[in-house]
Image 1: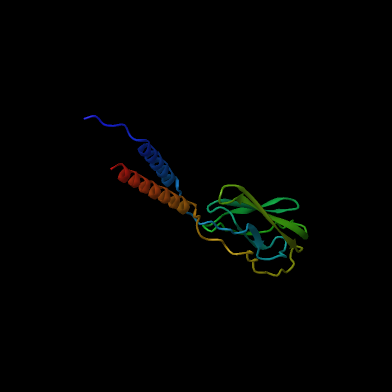
Image 2: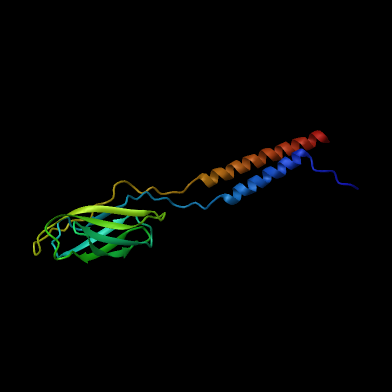
Length: 178
């Protein structure tokens, strides 16, 4: 007994099933997307030269090293590794030779996607030996956007709809040919 060649509807059905399989296999895993603004803050806005300061940078990639510096005459302050929330905290001492006045604190590292990230804030340094006032670090503006991408679910829905339509079409053609 000789087998008949596949009909055109069978070929179309096979091609669409293959396409559906590719779409299903290409669906990535959902991941949370956080919209945390990148900032650097100091525990005080008026530290003294040679005095302690705590710097907190956020919006960096978890596990990345964040380099902190003070500018006018750029001087490294140290580095810290960002935690799982992308926050790096460094407690250090400002250089004693830092002149009184406005200075920029810079935090440099990479964001969660690996792109370079560079954020700054301004402090006003008091003369060495002056008393300082400690303030709480500013809270970030906005709320974190949590959740996941629904693109994968949409793909799965499209695949199911296409397969359902193809099965109906194949069933209808079979009943017509009988």
